[in-house]
Length: 326
Image (tube, rainbow, N blue to C red; front, side, top):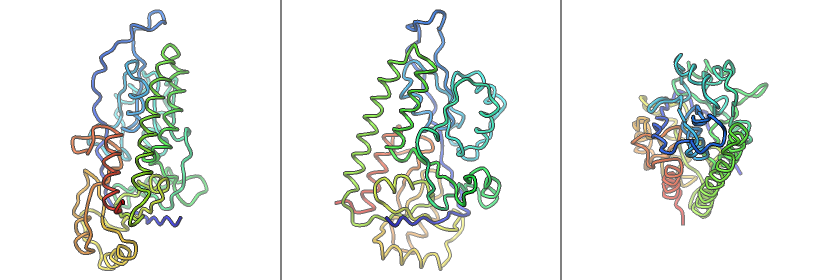
């Protein structure tokens, strides 16, 4: 499969993050451990980790997230309060390399259970995947942290957008919860099985929905969909060298027009909280439509879905329309 991906440069991508956690109603007084009246406290680094902790932990966990609603996860800086809170937690769940500030804080923390989602599945190199959410300066600043040792490219961290790999991570998280809080191991296993079924159903829906389409190519302004494209036989084409406030160059417009015509591309995707100015300019000049494809780095009231599964279903509908599903 010829999966072409272009380096993103100078595109500010802000994805609002982290649904505020609602109060969990049940208490843990049913615990068999004497004196254990508190819940299993989990600190999650950003929304996809928070969702796993809530789904697997159910009533037995108290989940807090380090990335607040509206915060861009890649550029997160932690407060002293957040760092202290992490030290008092029973477990921390994160995705190493996505948030350098979180990685550093966890390395220095004495929290007993540290769960790195990146170790629970296989991360892959999807070419020049840059996390350039604030221009060239940001790319330079984190170049060393985001590139694999001795490798030319970074390992792509956007693994949660592939339901199969996300399910692998969920399985590993459940095992870590069982080990750290054995009193509730049976419930964690049961909850993990229910989540695995949801993710399996989602995978089936994507396979069926994208099996027969007019084109396999989609344009996006954020190279977040490499795993999803690879899983379902699609080609992600990320916009090159454009920032949301600037007009695309005539050369790039011409190139996009040619690619769109050759590959039957109909749509330029952008994200919920990113300015749609560039996407609309490209679409107008290249004769394309625009739509939202959500990288699910967080949930806000602008998200097309209440949780991970809901937004992924919305993304599937958008892809089916854009790719001409039959």
